[in-house]
Image 1 (tube, rainbow, N blue to C red):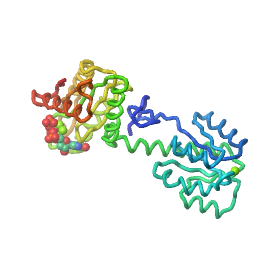
Image 2 (cartoon, helix red, strand yellow; image 1 turned 135 degrees about the horizontal axis):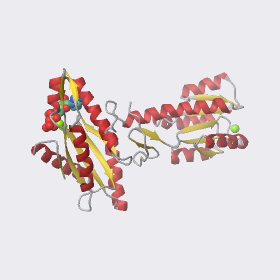
Image 3 (tube, rainbow, N blue to C red; image 1 turned 90 degrees about the vertical axis):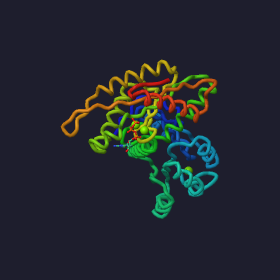
Image 4 (cartoon, protein in one colour; image 1 turned 30 degrees about the vertical axis):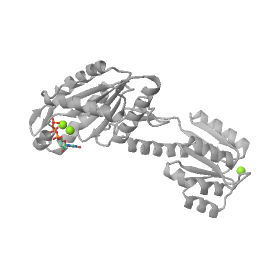
Length: 313
Ligand code: GH3
Ligand code: MG
Ligand code: MG
Ligand code: MG
């Protein structure tokens, strides 16, 4: 498992991550008309660094739910304008789809209502008076699951690099940042050299280890604001914000040297692997995502053509 540490994730809104770990301030929406309880919950949750929004009516709750997409919803069953069950029926589909857990908080202790709420897809049913200790542990568990899920949809399992989906999001985000703020970035495509030969000679498992070692080495060599992705099989992409192509070249060449000198052992032999790279930088003339990828790909091809283990701008 990659231990993702660092900061900065403009890519997935609300999620800050880099090198694998997710740092997010989770938003909890409380829909409850019990002003005193709400104030108490808010204080307790804010102490745990959660961001809390409050709706004292169902209507207000809907509005916040659709506008700000909270990460967890605490819902009272008895509300002034609608029943909590109505609210539940209206939001549960979207909440499930977006993995927003709903937790009922209620003075209603009827087993039938609890069963019904659970059958609709509610995650937890907490009875009033709320035991705050128990409540906070439950919430923490829910967010741990959410974090795992968030990670699983954007991180490649084998290498710990971000996956293709995250690559696409990052590309889109950085190009639109550029159009807005002229903040530059470089894109490097990295492709392992003669990797088929590694597989054929030492087997796929050894090939996998090489991919893992390579990814780890790259992650150790980049800044937190850089984003390292697995683009396809043995091809990777590195986004370097605020970095000219010339500076990116220096970074990559340092990694190239480190990686090529790395010794692998298999079948009682030692061997070395290298990679080739193509770099492009966004510019006024070139700011279309497909064209940028094309450019980097052509530069990569030049590196391959002129002997591999090198980088072309
Ligand atoms: P070149 O230097 O021109 O890039 O040659 P190459 O052999 O690296 O390129 P080619 O595209 O012919 O082969 C890539 C190989 O990478 C083929 C494929 O089986 C292997 N590969 C892709 N994904 C994985 C993976 O997850 N694990 C392993 N072990 N091999 C993989
Ligand atoms: Mg109430
Ligand atoms: Mg290759
Ligand atoms: Mg390839």
